[in-house]
Length: 125
Image (cartoon, rainbow, N blue to C red; front, side, top):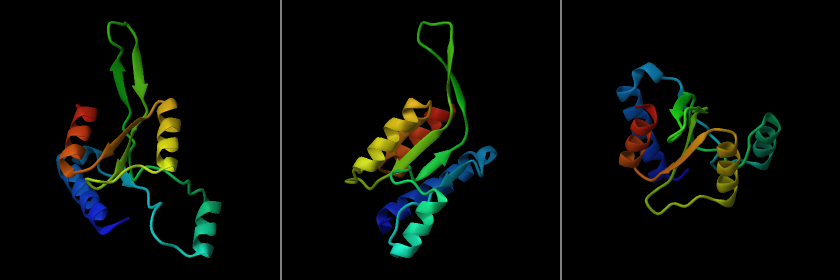
């Protein structure tokens, strides 16, 4: 993870823990990125590391009513990919997004603290 993206993500996690203390520990980082030796990369892959997994996972399910319907849909959790202002998803990240959305998770790409705050507040309220 580049330094700018790292700083944005750190600010987001700090804000979340202050704003939503009742969910502390349910938002966590997935340390998938970063430079690693081939040996370490092989070990991590054997342990279950998956390319494209979102940077942050929030394990708080939400129940939302379908528009003009009498039934509810459960969103299992929120996956957030952090990017810089100019950052874009990799093909692996897009593929992982499609997979988790098909299984009932919400997925968002956030490019700033403000975007993260908006995403979290809309999801949790």
